[in-house]
Image (cartoon, rainbow, N blue to C red; front, side):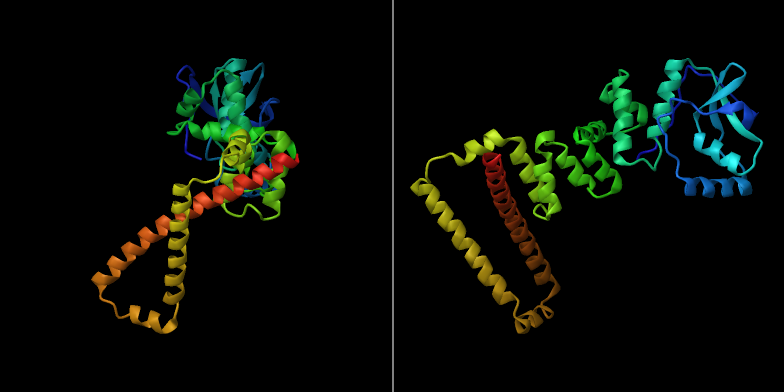
Length: 301
């Protein structure tokens, strides 16, 4: 995640040290789980070097509530420290909640779902996507929209994202599908039938736009001109296959090692053009197959 720093200009901060006993965690802190092993490691660092970054706290009566730094506070207790450095700020409850949310989503150890929930909580408080992106220092506001879309996933699939069973790309594509259809797509992912991003993207797009997909295959037979173009295309594919078959003869390949540098670069450029052309054809054919599979699923549902 890109670095961002909270610098609310309306806050006057005072740096000092406070007794740990006078500090307590924010009961509405968005982060509820703290990894014990990581806390123990941080406690070890604190024993050796101290608390290097002050906690951010706000006065509440005779005590001080944590806005940022609960993990350091917990680790300091494990390390046996009696005092910790703090920045005392003045803030009302509304600003405290906002700062806690912002501090939470700037952590580097968030999983995708925690990040999405953090963004959504701030959007629910009245932030626009653009304003929130600017607040966090993001150059691409779509990052926030992409994350919050993950909350469209059914709860079970959100859990699989947290566990790492679903990859980010699988999760983002699955979240585009209405919840009642997510199980159909997940089964194909699980069974290895959508084992490339092109297949996954094409299948999900066909499912999302199922009416257009149905219309695509409900067309008259090919015209003579279309049939001619298809025949020409199939002949081209056959010729490519024949060339590739011959190119893999070991004796012929030995000759390539003796080709001059200028000719090598020319042939590499040509191969790049051929590869790009074939990749376009493969993508279109993949979309065709995935659209037909989506159509069959829709008809069977």
